[in-house]
Amino acid sequence: MPDDHNNPNPGQPGHDGRDDDTPFDAVTRLYIRTHPADDGTEPLPAALPFWVSPDIWIVKPGGAVGGEAVPLQQNHVKVTVTNGGGIPAVDAYVEAFVADPSTVISPATAFLVGGGFLTVNGYSTADILLPWTPQASDSGHRCIVARVALTIPLDTYLNPAIFDVVGDRHVAQRNIQVLEVAKGQKMTFRFLIGSPGEGRAAATVRTVETTFDLDAKALTTMGGCAGGLPATEPLADLGVRVLSARETLVRPTLAADVRPALGIATRPDPVPEGREVGARLEGAKPRYAAVTFAVSPDEETGRLHAFDVVQLDDATGEVVGGLSFVVRVV
Image 1 (cartoon, one colour):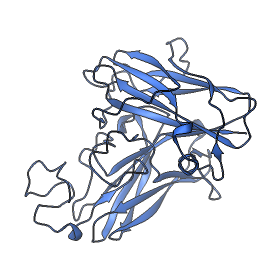
Image 2 (cartoon, rainbow, N blue to C red):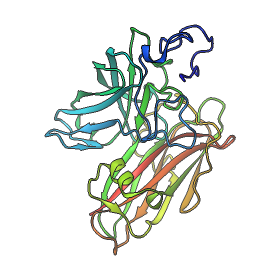
Image 3 (cartoon, rainbow, N blue to C red):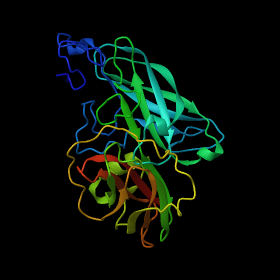
């Protein structure tokens, strides 16, 4: 049965143009998955991370797929859109945005790559490639957000001022950083902790290794690392800390007065037990943080590690953002 999550007035058209008397097969139902288990349900189940979309990728010059674009050359952002309804979605408009690695992203803190139209037949998927030529300053890892909108029949996101990836099936994000790290090497990766939001005084950022919670297929699919196998032993020295103003040499992308908004997963499952450490962000201003880890010198080349960085609201325990990392041992 279709949901009325975004239709406060049953019997009246909702944001997908459907009313209570319209057969499900006679509508469009567009969505971009924000998790491999996402079937377009609104809101996304709270137990699922909402920043690991399998439907958003960077395609490099020459056709290789990855998470990092080649600067000063034409890359593409590939977005896959699903139509769960029975009629074609003709000329649906897809947009893609990129942002610095961040736990929380909003349209105000992201750069619009571009947009384009595509048609998605009923009970089908369709891909669109959006060209992007990043500047030298845009090199390195990026987070990507995509959204889709259809005018006739109406099937679109509710609020263009936010990326409501949890509450709105038309919006998805991919905050997965794929890193190649040599055996025995220690690495530090810097990212931005978004503002906890209006009325939120503090946030906690936690990191936990998920390598041994994923099967080989899920791990390789998430990282785009075909043929990789899970690591045999955990990462060493896994930690995260909020950087001081003196340590932050580059000005944050987020302005101090910007308070990004985003769909909130209410009452999420507890952060998994295991290799977990945390840091606390006080106040409303966004700050940089750094996650550090080391790969065992005895690890096999080609093995894969994974870990999550999760931002939670201190007062409620709600998950307000996150990033996932896939580490390939070289």
